[in-house]
Image (tube, rainbow, N blue to C red; front, side, top):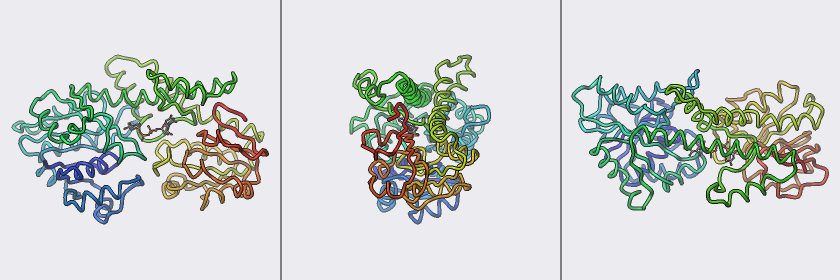
Length: 432
Ligand code: UDX
């Protein structure tokens, strides 16, 4: 099977490498010439554990190539996979211009019998819209448009793609369904749950899955805020409710809220899709509102500890939106640091992998070489990403460097550790 994979972001690159390692012939396409040049030299466009090795394995097996020539890749392909970005537009709806550009290129160049598989996260009805566009532009072409959402998480993307929890294939055409089963044969042999449904259902699965994950996080953050006032330890509550199989243990970690390129975007896109079909979600605006204010609860507690942050030096540990990635899209660190600076604090920040991103996204902030350097002489340490390095840090050199007393743990990484007695520990759901 020959696959053209359009877009070399997290989904496109990880999926392309995975299919190539499974023996499909994959051509990864991007309009960014620098990115493609670097990929040809084995340089990844972002930090993702295991990805350089997986790409190298696919390239050395002779099954993965890179190009900027979308037309040539599409002409050659049995299956064209679309993994381009769908950022939030001004009105909260997903901006589908890149997806439609791929559909237009497909209409222009695809061979008879080719299939356009959409892996980008899109609103319900997008496969039908692509289908109509292609049919209008290429009336004699025999083709199908399939919705095939991707559920990988950044930081574990390679593992998630090798061992997916499920594969969802949305099409109403039997011949396309048969080809998609061939594309996914190795997963089906491994008994990965394989769900076939309509394109609209498949599109709804992705939005609903991310909206549900966001809901779980906002729920436990509200319980944490409640526990903080009512007494009780939110970690104990989360552990106990998570043992109920109807609730499950995952995504019940309280903190400063969710960030990243997906959850918030997809919650908003689902609300916007609801508006379009005349359904007003009542739950989802609250999920987003809880998430938006969550980081400011901790900020306010930090500010209260000093009677205002002006003139204080704050070490911020962790800039990426979660560990295992250098991605700072919607990372709570960005507004948190900007507000600290606006209110007169000096900030020294550190992240194990996101320093280059930080230089671009918050150039106004001073960066330290190490976590301990950031903390040296600071009045407070604020932990915003749960990197292992922070979780496991040795308190003895840290307490020599850190002369302050306030520690704000936005991810609860030190909850179970015994801290030097002179530190005041502030975390979501706890004030030790
Ligand atoms: C998410 C979905 O998990 C994935 O299935 C989908 O394909 C893409 O969107 P991702 O954005 O990589 O993946 O990150 P995720 O692991 O979902 O975390 C999102 C945010 O929620 C992070 O900021 C994380 O720190 C936060 N989070 C997660 C919590 O605050 N508490 C939790 O219990 C879990």
